Structure formats: C-alpha cells, structure tokens
Amino acid sequence: MDKNSLGHHISQQFNAELEDIRSKVLAMGGLVEQQIQDALNALVTANVELAENVVKNDVKVNALEVNIDEECARILARRQPAASDLRLIVAVIKTITDLERIGDEAEKVARMAAELANLERPRNQYHETQHLGESVQHMVHDALDAFARMDVEAALKVALYDEEVDLKYEGILRQLITHMMEDPRSIKRVMDVIWSIRALERIGDHAKNICEYIIYLVKGKDVRHLGFDVIEKELRP
Amino acid sequence: MDKNSLGHHISQQFNAELEDIRSKVLAMGGLVEQQIQDALNALVTANVELAENVVKNDVKVNALEVNIDEECARILARRQPAASDLRLIVAVIKTITDLERIGDEAEKVARMAAELANLERPRNQYHETQHLGESVQHMVHDALDAFARMDVEAALKVALYDEEVDLKYEGILRQLITHMMEDPRSIKRVMDVIWSIRALERIGDHAKNICEYIIYLVKGKDVRHLGFDVIEKELRP
Image 1 (cartoon, rainbow over the protein chains, first blue to last red):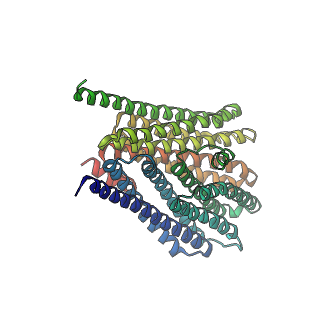
Image 2: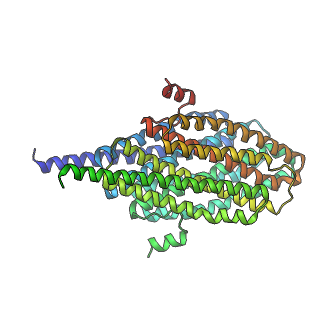
Image 3: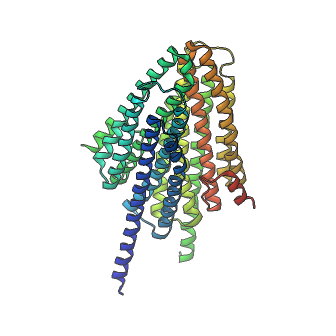
C-alpha cells in the first residue's frame, strides 16, 4: 500500500467515525423527542404508567450522553481534527449536554404528570400546556433536523421561534397565577402545572442553544449572547 | 537550537497556555460568585440599583465564556493535546457552560430582587432565602477551589452537599406554598420569591456539575449519572 492510499484509507475511516458520531447524536435526539412526547401524553391523559416509563428511560438518555462524550474524547485524542472537523466535535460535546438536560426536563414533566394524575382534573386545564409542549417538541425536532442537514437558515428560524414560546409560556403562567388567586385551594395542584410549563419553556431554551452551536459549526462564528437582529444581519447580508 | 530544546520550548509555551486558561476560568468563577452575592444582597436589602448592576454585568460573564471557548478551540487545533491535557480542555469547555448558566440564574435572582423591592416586605421573609443563597454561594466557591487545586476529595464533598441544598430548597418551597394558601393576596409576590429560590437551587446543581467534571479530569472517570454511593466507593476504595 503506498502512502497516498494509506492516507486516503485513514481519512475514510475518520469520516466514518465522524458520521457515526453524528448519527448517534441524532439517535439521542430521537429518544429525547420521544421522552417529551410521552411526558406530555402522560400529563394530558393522566397516564401514570407512561409517566413512570419516562422517568425510567432517562437513564438511557444519560448513557448515550456519556457514550458520545467518550467517543468525542477518543477522536480528539487519536485524530487530532482541525478546522470544521474540530468544530463539529466541539459542537457535538455541547449539543449532547443540552439534549441530556432536555431529557431531565422531560423527566420533570413526567414526575409532575404522575402527581397530577391523582388530583382533581378540571376541564381544559391541560389544553394550553399541551399546546406549549407541542411547540417545544417541534423546536427540538427542527433543531435536530437543522443539525442533520447543517442548515443555518433552519437553525436561525428555530432560535428565533424561541421568543414566541417564551410569550406563550408567560401567558399561561399569568392565567395560572390568576387561577390560584381565585381558588386558593387549587394552589398545590396549580404549582405542579407551573413546574411543568416551566420545564417545557426550558426545553425551548435548550433547543435554541443547539441551534446556536449549529451556526457556530457551519459559519465558524460564535453567535451566543448576540441579539437576534445582529445575528440575522450577520448571516443574511 | 537543537530539536530537544525546541520541544522543551514548545511544551513550556503550551504549559503557559494551559495555565492561562485555568486562571481565566477562575477569574470567570470569581465574577460569577460576585454576581450571586450581589443578587442576594439586592434581594435581602431591597437594593434596586445593585440588582440592575447584576443584570448589566451578565454580559461580562457571557463575554468571558466566549473568550475562553475560543481559546480552548485554538489550543485543540494548534497543540493537539492528549491524555490529561485533553481532559483539561474538555472539562474547561463544560465548566464554563455551567458558570455561564450560574450567571444567568444570578441575573434571574437580581430581576426578582428589583421587582420585590417595590412590593410589601414582610419581616423575615427573605431570611431563609438568604441562608439558601449563602449555601449555594459556598458550593460555587468550593467547586472553583477544587478546580484550582484539582482536589477530587473536595469536589466530591461539594457534590454530596447538593443533596442538603435540595432539602433546604424543598423546605422553603413548602413554607412559601403554605403562605400563599393562607394569604392569597400574597401570591404574586411569593411567586417571585419562589423563582428566586428555584434559581438558587439550580446554581447548586451547576456547582455539582462542575465537581463532576473535576473528578473526570483527575480520575479520567465519568461519574455523571452514577449514584453518589457508587462514586464514593469508586473513589475511596
């Protein structure tokens, strides 16, 4: 084997390793999406069994994080990647931290769902929570899609959408606080709903973080902490 | 210059770069500690000006995160570190994410402090919040100390202490909910207090995360998501 084909061989193997990491991130993302959906279903349909399943499955999310993290460290040590390959690894290390935290928030929703299932269930109480939950679930899905296709425009769209989610969250929160004031006996139950919508709102934040890493990864530009008007101007000249 | 002394020269420069990153992380940690303390003081003494200062200073925390992140990426690309040097860089990348989020939580406390300053101030209302805040402030301080000295025992102690903080938080939360039930007119104000103690509890979680990275860094063992009885057994055979 001459030197050139050896080099070619190594870089092919390296590409396969990077591809493997990318698909593992997407698999972790898929699991996390499922966790959000199950937690939300458990909440809306008062399904304790499903809620307990979500709590149990969180260890799978955690295991994937540790596994991908180790693979990244191995690649950094053995392949010593540069430029965009290096940015990919750094972006993956950060992305999986956010995916793991999204899993934690889904677990919180599931715990609240299990508690709420045994309490009084006022009609339509969880209608708006479900709506908020579906919004953040879409954000996570679209963020992972943008990651898969390295699509900066799509990432930017998801990140911008987080503001709408925040407004929705604040609207529901105001309603819930009013509800507590009108019916103080409901306070304990409503607090559980508040923790649920708070967890959902946090999921939106994490999806936004992932989108910022994608922009960094593709553009080599760190856009965290910039206003989105600035980011839009920089990315869409 | 012969090859050996060139190698020596490069490794000295490399050591200086690593030292520089470590001291920047500690500087960022110091700033974050100050933010927690100021936010807490603003809350307890109803000092709106101090609260606004904390909110303003959060950009400094963010700037430090971006700056250290870039330096880590530069070192990874140029020095291609291995083994414990590589683990240091990975641990730093993760640590500064948590420090930045601690800064965000301190900012949240400051925002609540500014709102609460203009509301009715029942006596002793913030006594226990202050106590909780001091606990997590100590956690952050000790975590940074453990980072500076690469002290696994100290890191483990901080991580274990997080359980006590969680219990404290839950105790205060129960009291506040009871308070809302007894005096529904207080609900809006008490909700602001609840967001404050929630933010403080999250700071404890982030300090614990940092301690887990220190253990990973020194021992090369990923201890996240393990029970602490397992961790203690592994680290203190």
